Image 1 (cartoon, rainbow, N blue to C red):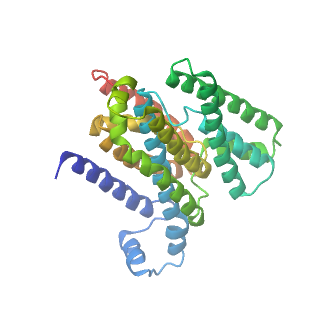
Image 2 (cartoon, helix red, strand yellow):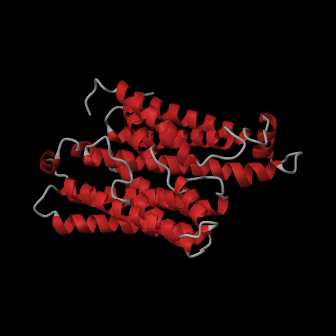
Image 3 (cartoon, helix red, strand yellow):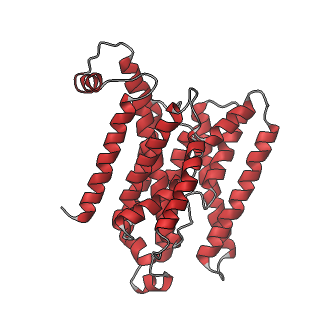
Length: 332
């Protein structure tokens, strides 16, 4: 077995162990015997066990792996495309756009499905605006730099609109709902919500994973990539489109969750090296593993559940500092 196969297999094994641990542990503990009996035979003596596993914990575990993996994969793709290790999935404003879409839907008293659809549309709209601005002013400038600056502008604009929505919200009902959504949570996710998100994430992730060798070539620089026959603008648009699709999809499901898309690609790079053909799948697996662990902490550390965005921020900052120290003698 090759080194790359061992790395991927090890990540999958850790993810499976974490998933089994998550199924068993919580406020309603489940023994290994009970879990095996339910999963293999569909039988259990406890009438509540089926509801706990299939209606609450299993959808939450699938969501955590999907959200964390998608954010980490998008972050790794962006970091490779922009050749900048400080880039995260929200560099083009998708997070702030989704946040405003959700805040607007909550203000309009839309149901959960409406909030998710509005968040998804807001994230896509923000990136489209950023790309449109960069194309209109970037013909005689550095294309990547103008694109990043356009994303910063759009992100600031939608952040201001989120603040306006919070200012306008009813402080008794709407404002707490907006604030809670912006902090991110997997608490209310149920199985019927997952198929559409899983399909969108799969549709966006596959082209990114297949573009690994192109990202390797892009890492040599724009001119070198063109000399080797890579249509850099086309590759950039494919990566941006697919990364936006997966990021907007999972944000619409879970709310805003930071740091995963910035930190976990660094961890994957430390383990797998700079080759994007292996780094991208490892980023997905590590991102899913990390968010699954953080979700377990969020729902068990105190009596009331902590929004997972708070946990990722508290853990992500020191972990990122540690990664920077460990890689301080290496070059990007």
